[in-house]
Image (cartoon, rainbow, N blue to C red; front, side):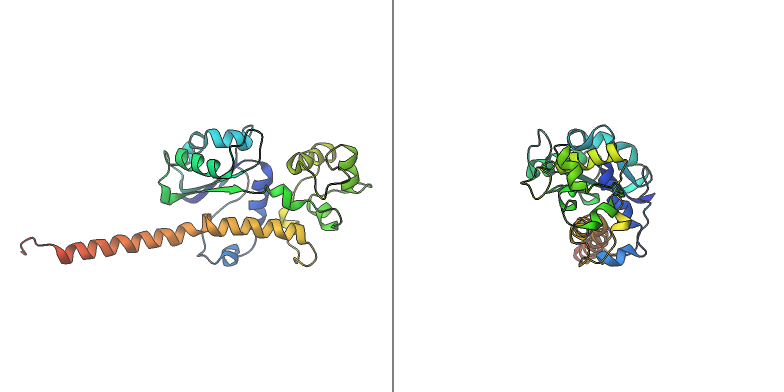
Length: 236
């Protein structure tokens, strides 16, 4: 069986994970033992296509069920901010309860991103943002988004950051490319912040599974040993 399956709400999350896990010895960045993962789409990372955040919130157990026989553990990632969202706390509780129908609680984790990944991405005067999304247009990306109504002049970031990125994808065939974001934080603060936040999520949840499993095994051995020592059954 595979080590872990990631079920994410959109393509940006999948590409972020692919960029992070594509690094050599990525496990050292999050201080865990090495584990096997293929972050290409539909290998160990799956997008809730057509469902996005709301659909993933409503039926994560159904979407994850096919992977229960192929993966030991599961991680679910979705945003906290979307139309009709009940809020981060209720999303975490609701998704955790539903996924527990398929996976044991100790073998799964739910990551609710607040704010959404795209909100960390946008920065008006950072040339690395254009590089990160492979935008090569003549006009500045902020001017493009302002003309399209996605980035008002009096806002430091687009009010709807995910929709802004989707507009750039549709109109200019851009694509968020995390591997190209791997530049020193001093030269690319917004992209580096997004990368650090995704690493932090992975640190807290996915890659911690191995250590949690080791702790469970040690706890089981201690209980077994203590039970044998306290047993009053007649000795052979």
